[in-house]
Length: 119
Image 1 (cartoon, rainbow, N blue to C red):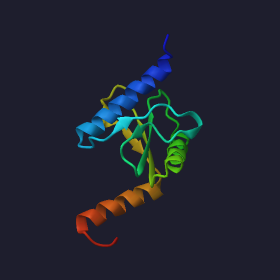
Image 2 (cartoon, rainbow, N blue to C red):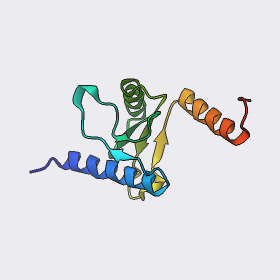
Image 3 (spheres, helix red, strand yellow):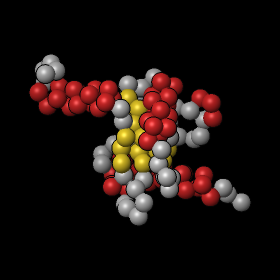
Image 4 (tube, rainbow, N blue to C red):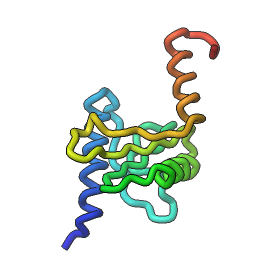
């Protein structure tokens, strides 16, 4: 018999991967659980480590720490936690990141829109 919590987490990881593929990131896929060498739940975007969480009670600090740990393990620039909102569709999920991660992503967005240096 399958662990219900593990099955719930797997469904959420697959839903997030499907959403990202539908948004044009065709290379995104769900990673197999890795134990001690956990580099996140999704692969296919080298510079981002994803920690997907579908829990009744969200622990923001723990989720953020886990996302940062996954990014370090993966050697990614950014780690984000994608947290399911109860009774809401996948696209309404929360994405949690620290301010350093947000600043880096914002800088990248501005660089690509301007084609020049950061503000």
